[in-house]
Length: 264
Length: 278
Ligand SMILES: Nc1ncnc2c1ncn2[C@@H]1O[C@H](COP(=O)(O)OP(=O)(O)OP(=O)(O)O)[C@@H](O)[C@H]1O
Ligand SMILES: [Mg+2]
View 1: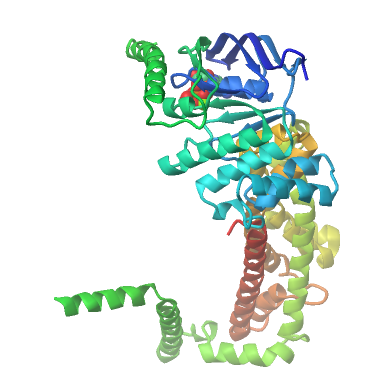
View 2: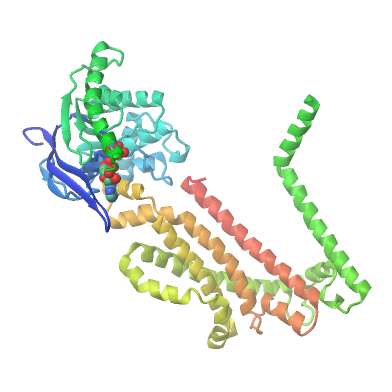
C-alpha cells in the first residue's frame, strides 16, 4: 500500500458529455483525496454529477481531463480492484445468489472449491446463509442488495463504490442495511465511496461528507464527521451535525432551483 | 342482499377457474362441429352441387382414422407415413435455420463489422416471402431437398431478427456490472449477452416454427419423394376430388403445428425455470 495511505486521488477532474447536438459539462475541477479505510459520502443536488464521478472511478466512463488515481495507479478502464454497487442492484437474474457472488471469481478461473469457499464466506458475512441457491427474482430488495455487496466484495476490491445502494429500499430496511454496511466495513476495512441523497444516511455512515456544487459538479465542502460509532440518530450531536450538513446542501439546492426557473 | 353477494362471489370464482375455461372450450368446439354438420347437410338438401366440397365432419373423422395406418384413398402411402415425412422436413429445415441464425444473430448484433457485412444482404432477402422461393428451390434442389430449403428460409429470419433484437436489448447495467467485476469483452458476450438473449431466441423459435408449417404445405404441393401431407392435400382435392381427405390433411397439419409449438413452449418453460426466470 502507499505510504501516505491515500487510496483514491482525484485532481481537477472534469467530464463533458457530448453528442451531435448537446454538450453537458457534468463535472468540472473536481478534486478529492480519500484515505484507505475511509467512508466518504458524496452528497449533492440531483444531476450534479455524483454518479458520473463514481462511474469514472469505476472505469465505466472516461475522463475529459484531470487526473484520477487509485492506489497511485492511473485509472484507464474498469477492473476488479474497484467494486461497484448499483442502486438497481444489477444482479444477473439467471444466476443464483451463489453464482452471482462467484461471477468475478469465475472470470479469474479460480478452481471451484476455492470459489465456493470465498462465496460461502461472503454469503455468511452479508447474512444470506440458506439462500445460496435462490435466484434474485425471489429475493426482497434488501436481500438483493446484500447479494450486490457480497458480489463486489468477493473480488476483494481495494475500494467499494456505492451509488445510492439503499435508495430503493423502504425506511426500515434502509436503516438496517446501513448498520449492516458498517458491520461489514469493520470486518473488511474497505475504503468506501458512497453516493446518497439522504443527509441522514450520510451523517450516519460517513467519516467525511463531501458536498458537491450544482452542475458542473465540484467539491463545495468536505465535512469531517467526528461522532463516535455506533451513532445514535436521536442524539443532540447527530441532530446538530445533520443540521449543519443540511444547510450547506440547501444553499446548493436553491441554486439549482433558481437556474431551473430561469430556464437554463 | 348477502345471498346475491354469495352468488356473485361464487360465479366470480367459477369464472376464474380452469374448469370454466375447459367447459367453454368444449362448448365452442362442439358448436362449431354442429354448425359444420348443419352446413354440409343444408348444401346436400339444397343440392346446389356444392356438397362435394364440404364433407360431413364425421366423414372427415372417419377418413382421418382410417387412413392413418391404411393407405390414403388415391395414394399409396398412409397419412402417418406422410405426416412423418413432412415433420422430418420441418425438423431438418428448422434445425438448420436455428443452427445458422442463432450464432449469426449474436455476431451481427455484437460486432459492428459483421453487421455492416451482413445487414445489406439480410435486408435484400428478408422482404421476399419464403414461398416465393419454391419454384427455383424445387427445380434446383429437386423435390427432395427443396421443401427443406423453403422451411429453412421461412424459419431463418424470425430467429435471426429476434436474436439480434435480444442482443440489442441487453441490460446495460448488467454489462456495466460485469465490467466492474473484471469481465473482458468475450466474457460479457458469453456470460451476459447470450443468457439475456434466451427469451428472445425462444420467441424467434416459436414464430419460426409457425412459419415452417406454412412453408412446408406450400413447398410439398408438387409430388415429392417419400410423400408429404402438403402433397396429399393438393392431390386429394385437385385429382381425386376427395375433399374429406383434403380436410383430414388440413387437420393433420394443424395438429402437428400444435405439437411442435407445444414442445417449444415446454422447452421454454424448462429453460426459464432452469434460469430462475419463471
Ligand atoms: N451518458 C450521458 N450522456 C449525456 N449526459 C449525461 C450522461 N450521463 C450523465 N449525463 C448528465 O450529466 C449530469 C450529471 O449526471 P449524474 O447522473 O452524474 O448526476 P447525479 O448527481 O448522479 O444525479 P442524481 O442525483 O439524479 O443521481 C446530468 O446533467 C446528466 O444529464
Ligand atoms: Mg446518480
